[in-house]
Length: 365
Image (tube, rainbow, N blue to C red; front, side):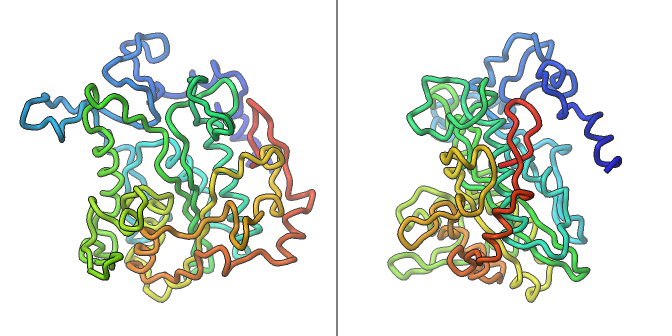
């Protein structure tokens, strides 16, 4: 216990005074400033504020590039690249959003104990991930908050910008050494496409950067999927199974992106990838007052009709990724992995609950 308590006491995250915390962190990536990182004038060249590490492209807008021009782009800094789990063959991926970095940070607590499963560890962990993400996300502009908007769920004062992620995902897999690797990720969030006349096509730049995370993953560029007309479509940016189904999601937008690339790469044998499991949790569960105070399996596993309200199945895009990785789709479906009576009993044990402290130590979903 001493080994755990000592680092926490030294950590800036263990302090309640935001001014003290700011002394230990770099300038906020959502409002870069000129000169002094805290008191300097906000650099209007990076507005609107957002939770994306970005840089100015330096490109000049001309008549020839009006459609593709963008004022800013993702800053793919070399020191923002990370790989996890620490196994031979795991590729480094670039990071630029605090939502994804938080998922990486929580993943670094791994590997999980051998007896960790969906309902005694990975679902509660994903719920905590979601809760923490909403604590640092949301919007400072109260005029933007709609009734029942999830942006209203973040603690006050509002510490962030842009829409929060809709889905938080966890993928786990037991390795040959019996240790359980896991990886957490979130769907796109924290961005603001702004005025196209000012920023240009920043939205496409950002989405293409997410899409590029899948480059060289399981030879996905050679893969094909079947559209509604029964025709084969080659993997690409402009069209995806989800878009074909009437949605708007491109490959790379989903919360599964980082976990799948980290966990289901070719460094693992095909037989091992078939054992991978996963869950996707909709952040809308934070609309339940009880779940903003303490974790409860019975509350978070409510159903609407014959489907779970907050446990989401893989979207058409993610189903294609699962197929490309030669994983087992059934291991990612909520209804084939329903909680048992034992899970409910353990999930409601008072010892499994923890209080949420506003503006302090965040220890619960």
